[in-house]
Length: 166
Image 1: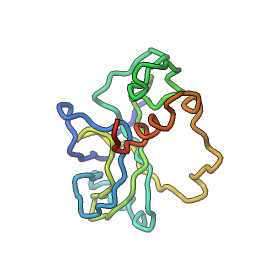
Image 2: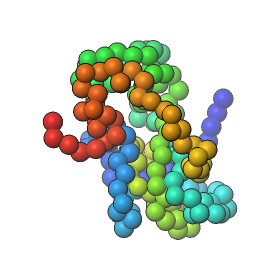
Image 3: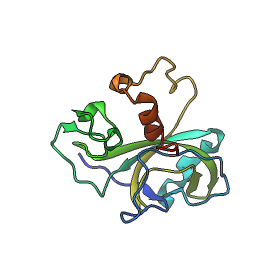
Image 4: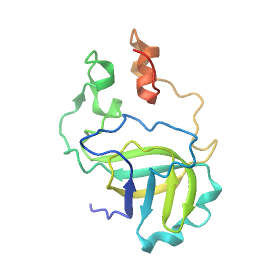
């Protein structure tokens, strides 16, 4: 199985500065720090994407080595719990494929300007897809094993990337 990148994600995050665990949504539509730059070959695929508010971004997690380890300890739990990799959103996975949902701010030529993405600058894009209201929203979704943690509410702030006092 082989995939070809269709473009590159641009963010202010580097390996030296780190990136957040999840995208942190802002309404700063003038912030042009976050952008998906598609190869010119794919520009026609952007037609009418601007009619949507959000999109899925699938990307290759190119700075983390794939792992055969099937148990992970999410860093935001403070080492309190170990879960199966498929019960986590850890970037260390058998296949280094990442998924983020971001707001579309604007589209100019082959560049899609978005709300913040939780990836390093230069990350290869595999695909983008529109996020469609009702089709992609599951109101009955829950927090799974996170509901069992004693400091659940505090940890959910970490999961959502919401700044808060410790």
